[in-house]
Image (cartoon, rainbow, N blue to C red; front, side, top):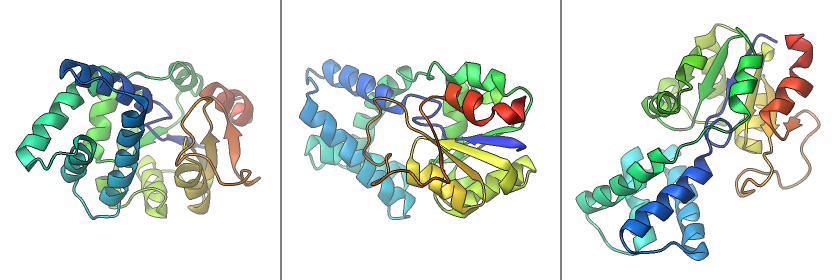
Length: 234
């Protein structure tokens, strides 16, 4: 094995936690407390409209506007929706946190080629990893516009491998979504690793049945390093 590709949200950065903290803080500033039902609505709207963005139905900015309109129930024009989302975005970005197991895992992997890929625009991915202090750890950081595709499309995995200069069969891909990350990577010829973090929201992440034996399953990046990559590192 020659290299590792990491997913970003849910794998390196606690996206769900940042959303909850950011939305709670932003709504509090508006005098509008967040409850469980509204939090669930926010999550559903993100999944639904972001999937539309990945399918080419909405631009990155428009999916944000649709989420705001669906959450507030108000028929905002574009400018008003952008103002609302920008207020949330400031609180969301301030809430970004790297999972505790990330730094030790990256250090343990040493000088092996490492990449990060997220199903968002490449500029946004690079911005996020810079803001949380991880950008320098990766040889390649890419997003959907860099390869003109989104996971689980094989072009994403193959494109990152090409940027790293390595052959797909020699590469691990680690991500928190079973189908999008692990199965997608396996079907593209890489070794798919599913990161099943304890307590993570299962929606969109877990398989309907037991994981296929071809997929390596770990519950932390420490497990990935010690149980999956140990022979390679050693």
